[in-house]
Image (cartoon, one colour):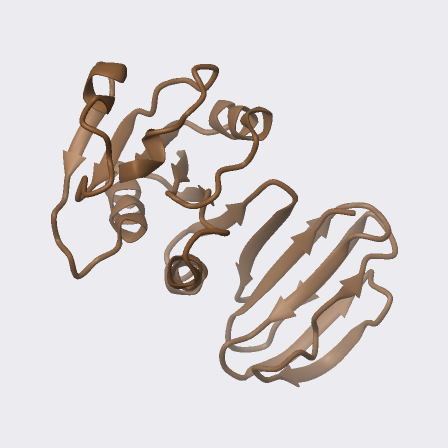
Length: 205
């Protein structure tokens, strides 16, 4: 089951969000993310969080949505939503609206990719970029000129990257700017790692 989680950051444009909702089986909005949804977007199946930023009128706006109150202050709403999705049976999770707000919330969203890549397929899909963790290998589909960056938070060994202007041939990547701002030369780029986990960031041209 594919689950889309809308976080309370900067949401993509309505057309992009509508496409994401339509290609997922379960739609979860976290707390205040439900406040400004376009009427063109189908109601979330679940609205979840501690409800500290959700407008009270939202319960009337979305009478068919399930409201899940989780007041635990030691866990972010986005992590609560991921856990709820997994408990519901999701095996593919997409986060959106996860970037562009508070910097600490953005960092937490990216850290979720590292944490949950151990148990499920997970990615961040935004207006013009996508981020996803790579533990073994992945293919990135785009067009020539797209930006592809590899970002690490710890040492990642035997990194290989093909289909780009500056290939990487079995290097160990450390937290640094090395691996950032590469360019795709075709419609597909391939990345693999020997050990560790990196974040691939694909920005469309």
